[in-house]
Amino acid sequence: MTITLKEQYSIFPVGMGAMPLSVAGRPTEQESITVIETFLELGGNFIDTANVYCLDDSDRGHNEKLICKSLKEVGKIDNVIVATKGGATRPDGGWGLRGGHPKQLRHACEQSLINLSSSELSLYYLHGPDPAIPLEDSIGELVNLKKEGKIRNIGIANVTIEELKLATNLTTITAVQNRCNPFCKGDFKNGLIDFCKLNKIIYVPYCPLGGWLDHVKLASSDLYVHLAEKYQVTSYLISLAWLFMKGDYIVPIPGMDKKDHIIMNFKSLDLKLLSEDIARIDAFPDLYYPKHLEV
Image 1: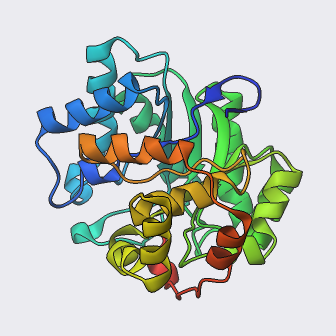
Image 2: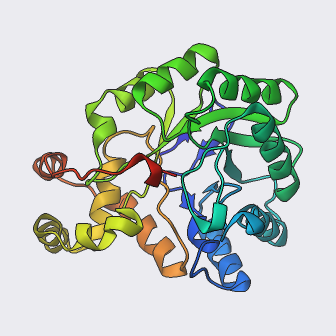
Image 3: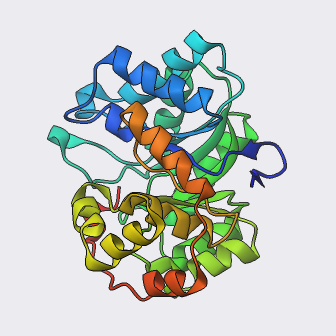
């Protein structure tokens, strides 16, 4: 199962969320490189990063530089889709402040080009709308950067359906990245995912296994314990299989910082859930996530 990124690339169904390789508790550089190499060896070709996947603003660009070094070592610098983002900051290691001013976005994009040793970014997201800046201004600057050949495809993350519709009125949006998992299914209910399908926009769910907030709670829930026993797999594979069966335009990006995580996540591609079990997951209760945590 593959999908096309505006008919330029063929994307493997499981993307790599690279953030865990650069935040607090991160592996050593060599361990991280081994993780990325394993992902590529098993067929992965879509890596998600951001300039703020780091410890704090003084460490900005760590994840991008790490990915670049890994791709150079394996000789695949031009054969992998690296999606990165601009428009957020990490003051004192915190999350959630936006940097959507055109000048900030331009600086972030041009620095990402340097970090990734690239003349053009395959996919560049606005990390999230900045409440202090009109979305038209932020997207408009990404359009300018695309016209200059610095961005090939524009994406947007952490958006509402209304914000997405506004963005698509301004330019072609190739991908949307929002938090989505069985605890957080809002985009299935508010029309955003249907809008993506209708407009051939790739939907990229982050934290598909619950994320650092809820992965343990998700895996230990009665429903997931039952389904794991029924299918003889881990609870986490159930979540990924559920997303895969929702549509081939959906490309989840589970966080990966160990080789075992990659091997496990790839096994989910062979897991086919029965329709009644998909319905049970669909009915699984959601939790509320404050906007500032959606980064």
